[in-house]
Length: 229
Image (cartoon, rainbow, N blue to C red):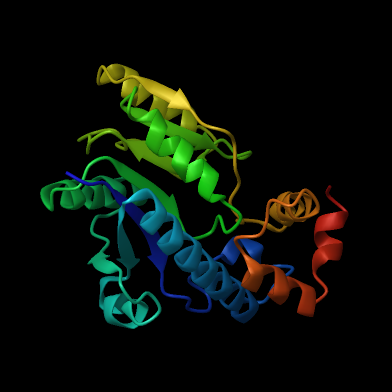
């Protein structure tokens, strides 16, 4: 049985993605930046999946956007996201991947463009020994989940809070699962998060997101980040 890399993505529609970046961005700019992040993530994830022997699965919201996003991701198997909230959608996607015969499972978002292939490799190695591995975010969440197998109930708690990592670890303990923390990463959710990307770029850790960097360069938005580094 082979594993799978699941990327959770939204259609880049103005006013429906990365709205917490507004301001300083307009809704149209936030959607354009997200489109760059998405294309970077898809390219880097496809290469990493091939190198790690994982099947690439693209989990799309809204469901009616599956065909349109499939055009951005040739070679990916596309699944609609289903469920009333992110936790439910993650659980359902993992269950669907398991039903297709995939294990272990790596789940990542499309707004962490600097996530390096080495972290995916570390996550895959971790679930040879534990049931759940998580890469923490500075905001109390996480940007990568590794599962030895799909786990019903793991994400049945509020997801958009500063306690997401803590709550997921608590759910894992309650379910009798062994967990491990991976090296930390970050998502681009708010303007202050540009500081993390600026730091990663200076440290040579942003090679996976050339489109995202170029978009920010063209608009001279690094001043927002530099003030927060």
